[in-house]
Length: 432
Image (tube, rainbow, N blue to C red; front, side, top):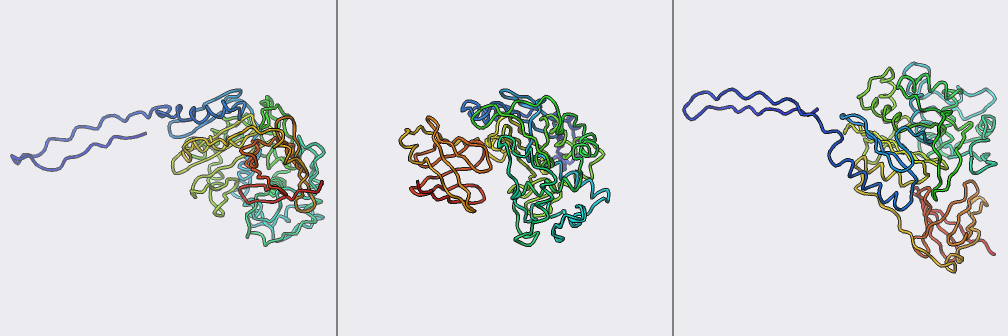
């Protein structure tokens, strides 16, 4: 609450008499709820996203000293259950923080200590390395071969995980290189809690009053791909601790409120430990934004997108959930957080079938893998070895993008170039 501080005037009158006593300060003013202009600012960010049919629905939640509030748009609201994807990692990080606080594990314990004796995992890789994405593990294991690309993790078992771990040898010394690894977080969750959902509910969710968060939560909102086509939910098998949670905006506001000190809980020590930076890029479960202080995480499944952020200095938390798999959700989160003025949508142009057909073909990646580009009526489709087919939207005659991620593509006469935040990759065109 803001307090008005009275100004004490020290001095004497011209006659030499003492100054009269200062008037008592007025009573504290209540902070307006919600803050003036907040709704209008978020409405302005969301409007072009809905009008351009980038999402079916989304909900924005904020938590600060005024209290929690939710702004809902389209097909979902603050109580809608949405898949969290990699935001699940925040909860796995909390499980690790809680276990460290209770003396059950130490960050520098070797992972092998907690694996079956027959799994010959490298001794030098620790729990800290898994949690900070510096273990040298790939994003996915090489025996990841989903039978159904629309539910890619469903058939990946713990037995497959152990088989891969027994063969894995890091290419760089653990602790040296940051590389996001869903596999590493899935392994961390297996080590901490083989029965992930039960342990998480007892140690984290119940103390925070998060009754609508879990893996087997009912009433899941209908998800949509980047083209607003309805898709089924994902099931995560051995990857549950890396992406399997479902939750609501109101539940996640409780997590943010507890982290900011607006709600008391029995796990405050674990919450604080999880927020402590371990590297310049990672705390436990939280990534660190470019300002060096804001903690955040994003997540995505085939039909949902999530954004969670915490600015301890400003006392502000933001959650954005959508029932559509579109990375534009992250921009709305940054607007709500005050890190971005407005949402910047990529342009879309219409191309003739003649121009589209110029790029149809197969393109060779490293390791003998191929991408395929097909035309379906008035647009192109990208077919990858381990991803569901994705529609390509034209920004120009040679530049394309997908709406489900930040991937962009530039076509050349003899190749295509994949543009991602972590670098470019060229795929040469195969001979027809």
